[in-house]
Image 1 (cartoon, rainbow, N blue to C red):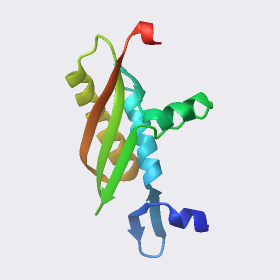
Image 2 (cartoon, helix red, strand yellow):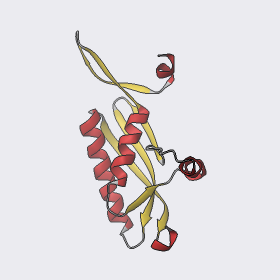
Image 3 (tube, helix red, strand yellow):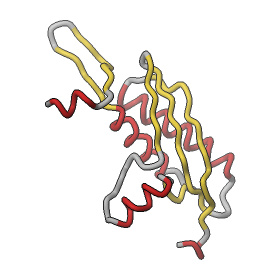
Image 4 (cartoon, rainbow, N blue to C red):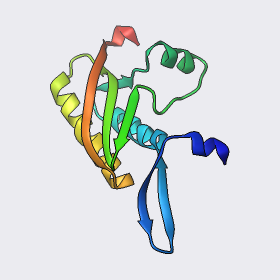
Length: 128
């Protein structure tokens, strides 16, 4: 139980007599990563060189390329994406922002303040 106390968590719901619901930042990051990769035109999340090492080891890091900041029930998400060649970066980015916001708000009850996107690369068929 000590290990869980070290993680950054946030109370999202509390009711008299029934207890409370606490969500770890990592859970919000995983929700964000999954929602982002479901958007057509997103090739993958980019986690930098450490993410590449983890991927080579065969470990799937669902929060790779995602940074979360939660303050007073407001979430700020920073995503680093690789986009498929031929897709409109502004259109893909807008769809990612919408999908990530909706997923976090519907699954956690937290309010999404910002979804910031950094495009780290464009992937062509030759890159695969």
